[in-house]
Length: 125
Image (cartoon, rainbow, N blue to C red; front, top):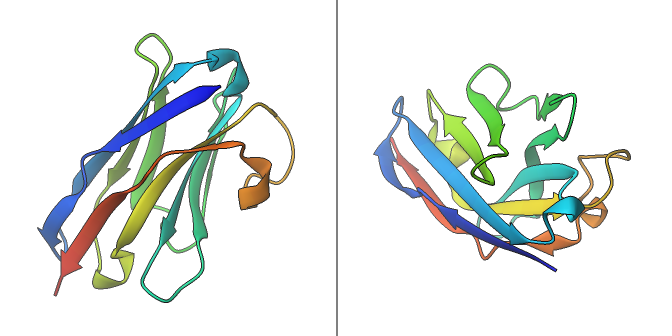
């Protein structure tokens, strides 16, 4: 099993920045792809960003491209999501997810086998 714990959420004004972290433990060999998803009130969960082991390839939703950066610190088993130029529409609960697969559609939630409990991000206008 893999355990995921998110941190770093909070309240920020539009244009500000936040850094989310996801600490993972357990079967770290089952974290070939790590992703961030978000879910706003009354909305479906949506893909935000993903990173793959080895090549370190990164992927972003169009809505966050150029503003968010995903990174992975394998030594400390942490995945970070740096969020800059935040907008009110970024308000959501953000979830960290892990998949043992290093291939497949990283945008699809069903690729991921393990999920954190989420951290709230609120951006005020």
